[in-house]
Image (cartoon, rainbow, N blue to C red; front, side, top):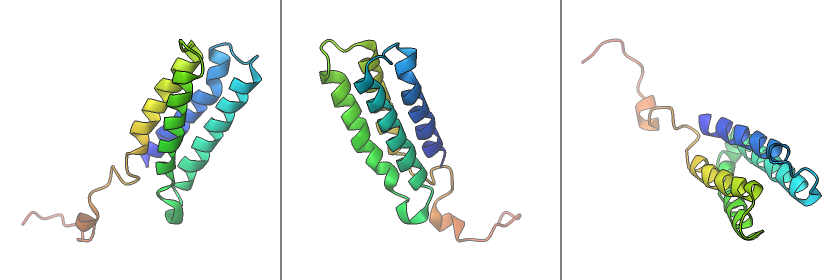
Amino acid sequence: MWGRVIEIMTAVWLAASPFVFGVQADPTLLWADLGVALLICVLSALSYWPPTRHAHLLILLVSIGLIVWGRFAVLPPTPAHQNHIFVGIFLSMMALIPNEASLPPRAWRKFPASDECP
């Protein structure tokens, strides 16, 4: 589940980035970043609940939206929109990581642990 933790950390960065780039005076950009960050946090958190364990895959749609918005909102992209492009690309990589990526395969987990080598 480390991928979901990184997604939440990236959402925190996205929420803080309007203040870092000095665009907090633009209410559209500020509220859009806060809304997208909240959506990323919700989808990542839903992945911890077994019935919605694949909710993190919806972050792929959010990341594509960030990339498109960052690229075509203003030409040439400002640093704040370049940040959207970078965060979108990074989130698209993180969203593809399965929840149980750090665990052995399920078939291996069925066997009892043995201290002896055969």
